[in-house]
Length: 161
Image (cartoon, rainbow, N blue to C red):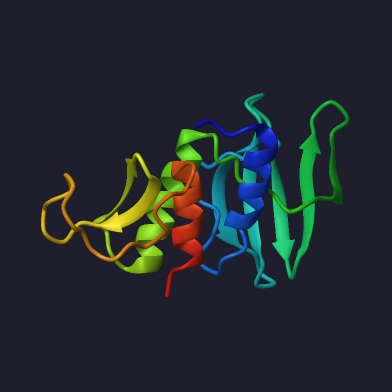
């Protein structure tokens, strides 16, 4: 099953809610900006260096729910700043989904966590006995029956200890 842009936007909003979520370099936002670097700012917030493929980058700073976007306009030789909005991850992008898988494994403390698709849907699982073909596997990290791989990852991140 494929997601529509609206479904991806809603799932992306759910993805940023768990405390285990953070931006990783390589992830894509729904505004089509690629995250090039992530770091901590001096005031305890986060910054994301973003690129839109044009070769120019700008910075998105977030602190306590407030986001500011800054950059440099070469044509006018001046810096600029404007209020921004919280970025939403594009869960249709394979790099973003891969970053989310890494975050889920980290949140659950188990690098063996995998996403499987069955006739009942997608789920995040940890293989403990080496048998997946119709045999019991470990406790599920997300409910069996998620419509997409990304949905199973978001559920697993939200259910992390």
